[in-house]
Image (cartoon, rainbow, N blue to C red; front, side, top):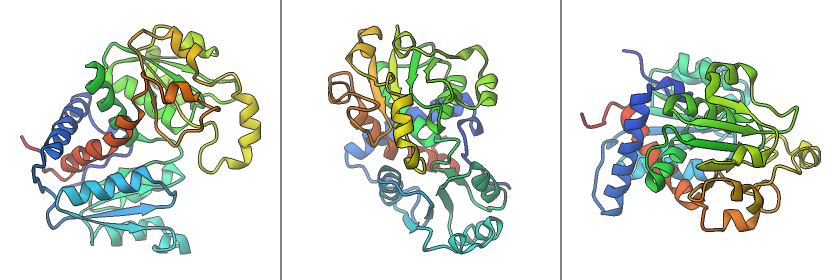
Length: 304
């Protein structure tokens, strides 16, 4: 039997994704009550990091521990991938030794190749094209604060990057409208946009994109690996800061999210990210709970 992988949000059905979000909320409540629940007892999570991260490492490692399992952290120095071993060979070997694998890397094609040769489930913990685990946490956070996200309006302000791509897929899967505000030359992938149909629209003016929105979200202007473009991007995105004026056009009960780390005074003002509409700390915590629900599902340990 072939394992199920989670490389993009399109790998699960809309129904599965909605059930996963509800399960994440349940698991969060169980953990807050101090309940012991160990569906990963004697199971091992392999964590392959070619890109560093605080939230991704801690949330997956803590999640495996809370589930009674064990996590092995592998940096580029710790695997033969960093010494030129074919991805296929690393996948064949690792998947014979661990029960589930998460990978945080650059090229999306690399994780697709890895999954194609793995005997166990593979989770995309970020590639240059997608960041689906973050979207699970984001939707969970919205549901906790405002209820169902279906038929709502989300405004993405900033770069058409991997987070933006995952928001486009989320709009398709969860049934919300997505307004994307980005400068010319920084649009999301045209094929990903086209596949979403009229669920997604690109609007140049961030205030127009945020008008009537239920959720406003953004990301850093220069992602990991783009640091040399920082000054160029600062000029290109100068009018794309999510500040009080942008939030004023959103619905009165709109909330603000950011996948972090954040640069106050660049993509978001301090008054917004530290203000009453911000739910970024709940959003960050929910990486833990959403990913626990995901691992439970992929390991076929979820309750019927």
